[in-house]
Amino acid sequence: MNNCELCVPDQEEHDFFTGRCVLVNGPVIVGAGPSGLAVGAGLKQQGVPFVIIERANCIASLWQNRTYDRLNLHLPKQFCQLPYVPFPRKFPNYPSKHQFVGYLESYAAHFGIAPRFGETVGSARYDGACGLWRVRTRAAAGVVGGGSCETETEYICRWVVVASGENAEKVVPEFDGLREEFAGGVVHACDYKSGEGFGGKRVLVVGCGNSGMEVSLDLCHHRALPSMVVRSSVHVLPREIFGKSTFELGVSMMKWMPIWVVDKVLLGASRLILGNIDKYGLKRPKMGPLQLKNTNGKTPVLDIGTLSKIKSGEIEVVPHGIKKFLHGGVEFVNGEILEIDSVILATGYCSNVPSWLKESEFFTSDGFPRNPFPNGWKGKNGLYAVGFTRRGISGASLDAIRVSQDIGKIWNRETKQKNRSVGVVCHKRCN
Image (cartoon, rainbow, N blue to C red):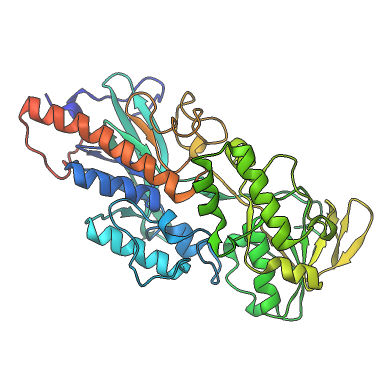
């Protein structure tokens, strides 16, 4: 019996779907970033059909559309490649964002992965009546009568892979006076491309993570006058220690030493190379960098030149919280007023999973799996997650392999038992 014939909307929805209905003989993957592509490649290896849904018009939209021009991978390329296909040998140790995007596009082409672009997931709900998932999407379908027209599609599938990522939406804090009073330009780091238009301007960078540090450095290179707000403690480490990647060194040592010992070694080497950064307004957390990353997901800053600009005074560190913005400046909580021309919010990103996934057991209200890595990849009723490990692309790749193998095992076992043919995707009208 066709599964589609069994599915009627569950009573929680209280409505009948009037859009297009598609039965998918395999999983629906939400997100065509590195995580979604890695899952797709693994499923191809297993012979499992799938559909990837992507709200943007391209793969890896975060990398293509929401990163600054000077961005390079922070980690060596061997820690950033996807399963089954390594980076080209000719690539440098720290590929540029353009090289990385090219690699991802080649990866998708190699495995014949063709996402459905321009579709935004509005909801994904498990229908207990038929044991399948209902994933509803919206897509712009042109202009009708002077207004935009949207098409709605409901995908019905057995498995859903959440691969929308940790950084799906920008975080924009509310500051008193920023929108109403401040007369200068305000952009989030995701909309910042380069400091080309900021030459000679006094720019306040809010945030001191890797993005805030690199944006401040880029502004210096374009002769802007950046001031960076550092409201909390931060670990700054050299990208390399005595010619070896700091990250690679840490990973190697953790095979033989407890994490707190590795932290002490890294911090000792950092102090030797970078000096005492406290006197420049950069206070280190009490917890070590690797322990902090594992516990809270807070990534240490890997310095690529920003610290030298701070030491020289070309980047001013402001170790105070913001009280309010004025017409031509900003007032800090200590009463100090700084005149500025522009503001760049390097205030990070967040998951958007709770806004569309209608379940609360597997994911927290923050949009991360409740179980920490390496046990956060599989939920109930065919629900999976990839790219939420807080361990970068290497962590996402490990989960992608687990997910694709798990689905492939079930798919191939049942296919063999039922002696059914494997189609690419079966599309049927369900209404």
